Amino acid sequence: MADTAGTPLPGRVRDLLDDLDAVSGDAIGDAAALLLESVANDGIVHVAGAGHSLAMVCETFYRAGGLAAVRPIWDAGVLPLDDAVRSTRVEREPGVGRRVVAAAAPAPPDVAVVFSTSGRNPYPVEVAEACAARGVPVVAVTSARASRGAAARAPTSLADHAAIVLDTRVPPGDALHPPEGPRTAAVSTILAAYTWARVLADLDDLAAARGVGLPRWTSANVPGGDEGNAALLARYKDRIPELAGG
Image 1 (cartoon, rainbow, N blue to C red):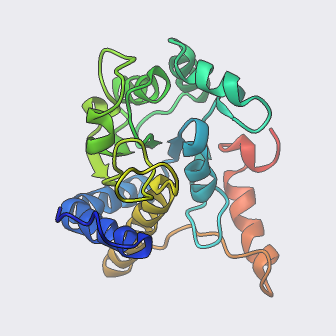
Image 2 (spheres, helix red, strand yellow; image 1 turned 45 degrees about the horizontal axis):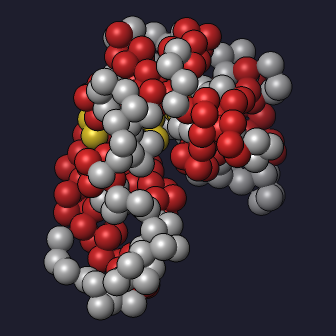
């Protein structure tokens, strides 16, 4: 990646997006193909993350234009909204990720997508490792640069257990501004959300080319949205209990 130290923040973000396209473009297509194979065979896409990576779990679940066959798997302890210090502690606690996967019990033809910028804490590593051990392929949405610069709190990294790695290119420490000594303007959510949007776009194109209908949510805020989603809720609510408070 070119040196962009003197570039204003908007330009630096755009440069990172271009870098992501160049580095991860092929892998994004591979991830779309993997998801299509799973969903076409009535599989579920299990999504996981901790701390601020839970923003990406929300981005994938029950989202306008998103796949209906998505189940969030998570432990309440990793949510930072009511106890931020606890969320950091739980993400580093061995065993939590394995328990989450055991409770969700994913199995082929399911797929797992695990979001973690550093991919070095036990929670996301264990989720990926446990899913892979069940024969469920893992798509890791992570940053190789951030991972190299992070403290290793698990013997392996998230990427070590992934069938496909989507490198978001997030810099170590996440912050992007000011360029001479970054301390604010975290960029991980922007890059991860863009990555996921690209996966969905490639998935849509691939499904259309193969004549496969995808189960997709429609915004509840447009006419007919609730009615269109009712069939999807009926189809998936027993397999995805989080859809109806189960």
